[in-house]
Amino acid sequence: MKKHCIDLTVSGVERIHGRYVLLRLTDEKPLPEMRPGQFVEVRVNGSPTTFLRRPISINFVDEERNELWLLVAMVGDGTRRLAELKTGEKLNCVLPLGRGFSLPESPEQRFLLVGGGVGTAPLLLLGREIARLGGEPTFLLGARTETDLLELEYFNKYGRVCATTEDGSAGERGFVTDHSVLQNEHFDQICTCGPLPMMKAVAAYANRVGTPCEASLENLMACGVGACLCCVEKTVRGNLCVCTEGPVFNTKELLWQN
Image (cartoon, rainbow, N blue to C red; front, side, top):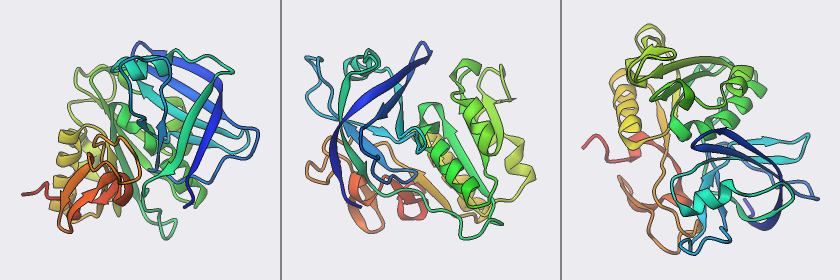
């Protein structure tokens, strides 16, 4: 897909709670086509400690409003500066980047989308696309506590939502791999994004039950075009740049099980 470098206009900033902000971006022209699992490299202005662009997953694309949504977790100076953006300001973005998730070949395919923390972000657009194709995804979302379960009102629009929290404040207590849906139901495809230990556990479960699984890796990606080599991941095909060969990989390609 063709890549674009665009100054997008901030059309909305929503503080979800203390650590998370939802940025809505728009443009005078129609936004480029974007696929679930792809990402954006954003330039952070006004941060003296942020020299490189920041990769952020594409959370959602609202075609009617011509909006791109980015879910930002404030973990450093760069992301805190992004959270301080105001409506009407510009944000320079390179997009769309990377390879996304596979989509169902038929509406009958049962997809389980497993996410943890801010890693749930790319699963919203994926769920919407599965629903558009006639399917009904099941979302399995994990968090430390109830307030860390993000965008539930949007996920509920496109499929069934199951949840786990480590403290038991919402859904079932424990990790996503402890949820009863994994013991009681069969799925044709699993897609996951979130903390690395969680994705490895989901991949191990998928391997054990013989279900195909794709994972969106969150390696540090400074350039987004395979030039800097800082995002390299070891795979069965050798060392690959996550930003160009991924970020979504079939977990059988990864060396996690070794």
